[in-house]
Image 1: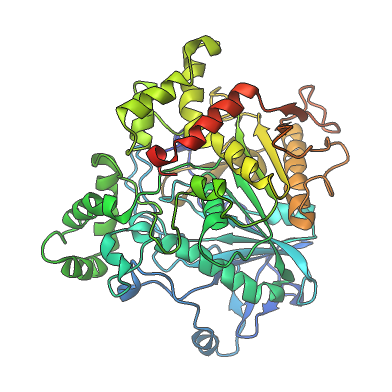
Image 2 (image 1 turned 180 degrees about the vertical axis):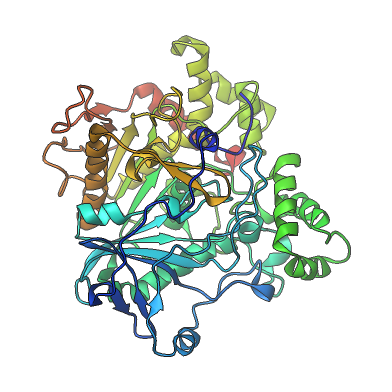
Length: 547
């Protein structure tokens, strides 16, 4: 297998004709039902369905430009926003510029987007207002922390299906612009580690303060994400911050290693050099980088990701402030938000690639020694698998993503409720690669395949696919509304048994195999003893994985 930075679903999408981000054209309306007053500004949204309003591109922070580059975001200056509006209703009917993209490593250059991107999209029922007190879903998109555009994951149809919630989708800084890390950032005069994650934190704080104006209940927030979004919600669980949420949905948790800033020094040096800022003190280099063009930064971050060994991706770090330990160890030690969770993965996913199992794992986890890699390989003997291909997939997939399901659920189930799943419906456009990473995104978001530089293509869905998507959305929004995926599930859907450490039940989510839209194809199973054993081993190797 060839190591790339793009998931199979995205790679397939890159071969399709790319569609511009405004793929779903909403219906415009000037009725009072799609105007919200936050107290400092009024926003007009799209009446995208008769019962649904989408408020697009609402700022939650000050633009992180100039001297604010590589720093934690500043809270939105509402006095400035009010003054600039001048009493007029602000148009929020078009998707905003997405954050600067990194290259997927599949022939694209990256670099599209804007630094002035700290916005949220809010989807609400028509007529929702202060006092409606609807539960809230906050969605954090995936993309490896280096690409992703929330326009590719629209929620209009979720609200149309269930007008009992408000949904918020977050834009946060990506790649080097969001996750440049060096030891000198321990002094905030120089900058801040984990700036892109601090964006997410500030978005949650903005939601806590303002979502009531859109009909939401700030005390009833669930956070949700897939891949790097799943990693993000796991990190919010263990972050040394106020936990402004009451539930977590973690999909295919990207178990990427969290480096220490000291381990990022070679990355910073190469990045600064390629951006034309490689000389002088770190202070001088940072000053140069803050005045560099986005084009120079984009080219530099892509070069680093493709040419540097070890910790070459710009991602969250253990900074001693927001994160004081690796998430797996924080979970094992009980140092995490005490909230119910839904957590799962797809049947055939892996994010680690290489010529051998050991090489793939060491490329994915740069701190892993040859001895530890060999111990991992020993946990996956060929005799336990039907084929070599399956052995490689499981041996690389469990440590890199799948075991997030067992590790999180096992910790949470000691003191709260956990529901786990195995998603088993392939993306029909993926070309027969099994149920790969991000397959559920295609189903839950109108047949989306993401492409280069924030683009995406929506594929028409069949009636059976639409029916299955509605089943998934009902489970998810039932959890958002009640903390239990069963309370408001569809009548045809099976009851989802919680995971416990004595009975590791989970649901298999898939279409009805007879193509009948009025019955569910999902069913219950138990996590195998072998998988539990392997994932328990993975959890013990926290130092080698730095996760």
